[in-house]
Amino acid sequence: MNRIRFATSNPGKLAEARAFLTGWEVVEAPGDVDEDQPDFAGNAIKKATAAAAATGLVFAEDSGLEVGALGGAPGVHSRRYAATDAARIARLLAELAEKSDRSARFVAVIALANGKDVQLFSGAVEGVIAIEPRGKGGFGYDPVFIPKEGDGRTFAEMGREEKSALSHRGRALTALSAYLSAMLEP
Ligand code: IMP
Image 1 (tube, helix red, strand yellow):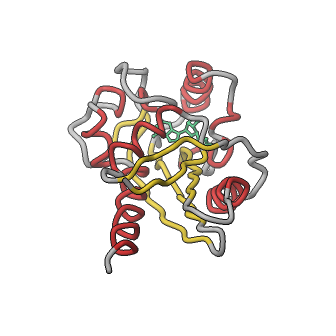
Image 2 (cartoon, helix red, strand yellow):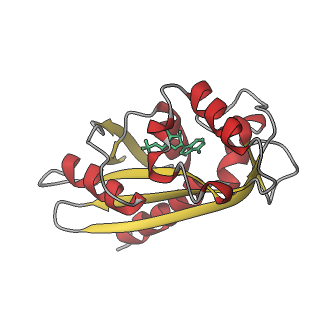
């Protein structure tokens, strides 16, 4: 089986990537770098190139939640918004308490490094932030994110496949998967 490394320390992201890249052995690689770039692409490139080796493929992903009424925050700071997922959600709900616009978007950018150059793949999903958390699946802000293309459930109330069919990461992984398949064609 073809092997690809994924520079991440997030088990939720790893599980979602493995479900997409069927036919590939997706191996976890160290993904801890200082995410100090101004945008998702910059951080994804930094993570992928830090883990790149002379041979073989490695990809990394940076993602986050952009909330309209908060000027795009937490954005690239989504993970650092508070110490735990529960605290991040509590802070988000508190900051939106007085706002009527609850529209939000998840964005994901994947950087694929092959030791020579880097390719980018991105995906986004539009939605709204729920009044209170619902559901036990997924990770991060999933319990408060209701995708517009869904049926009113949060991502955390969906199974992994249902979430991935709509999600920012699912869309970026679909693009990555198509690129990898084309790369292998004789
Ligand atoms: P990073 O890309 O590891 O820096 O972190 C992105 C952060 O954005 C995660 O820790 C989550 O808080 C949030 N995030 C990204 N994608 C998702 C998702 O699919 N569901 C819920 N939260 C997400």
